[in-house]
Length: 412
Figure (tube, rainbow, N blue to C red):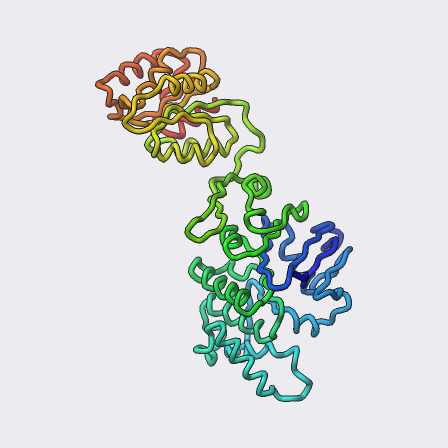
């Protein structure tokens, strides 16, 4: 498939400030391409360069094989339809008037609009479901309706390429999906080449044929959504922890953001957590984001804390429900405990199924143990409370009344 837009080693500047250096990528005819990346990565600046709204400091951009340096603005307007983030006007134009502006590149001076122009305007209104309010004033419309009208105006140009600069950023999730489904149908059914900036990585992954990941360091990765939506790459670019998995219902690679990274470097502290029943979810995610080494005691298959451990690729020991804890699991759990620096016991209920977790720590005196307060969690006929009472006699054991105290004891 031929490239319809090609960026060749371009460098972009605002005055003396260099925004991007030596950027190269191409967009093939008929592709739906999304540019993603953190704020300040230069995404909108790249679109400005393609639209000839900013001069290139170096390199070149070709559109349909022709350098933009030799393409006139009128020529460009006949090839590219542009949809900005927002379109505001102070005069009361009707929707029809706004869409009719898309025919301006084809108008001849002092000549009236042709019948063909009117037909194209009406078709653009029909395609975007805006025909029903063509006589309304543009400024009376909702945000989602306005975006549809601006897309209709771009379609009235009869472009081969539609470029959108974060066109859904100010819309609620209903209207975001509405606009993207419209653009996707134009791409698939009319063969329109689409280039858009996206902040929502899941929507970019769901609708795009190709994704270009930009950062201040340039193009980090370019390719299909499954190639670019890579957990390790995105973690580093966005400086946050996330889980990347397949959405089997909609057949795309999706991102579940966890939390921003509080620490740039890994902490040389191993925390072993005794949890279960969802009592460890927040603690696990927080310590993971703060770059602690983490392991978990014996968890039962089906436990939500176990799901978190698996998602974060943590060390853990697992047993099946209603089965006796194996010697192998006890040995593995003891190994994690022996290698840890700190042990945290959440407010998990203790029964005979997980009592071995507690038995393994009752005689530890050489490492910090933090126990989170809870009431009515002893389901082993008082045996857990006996161990707890004995443990509290020793200086290495801290009893936290809440999570704030727990994290204070961990860090002090």
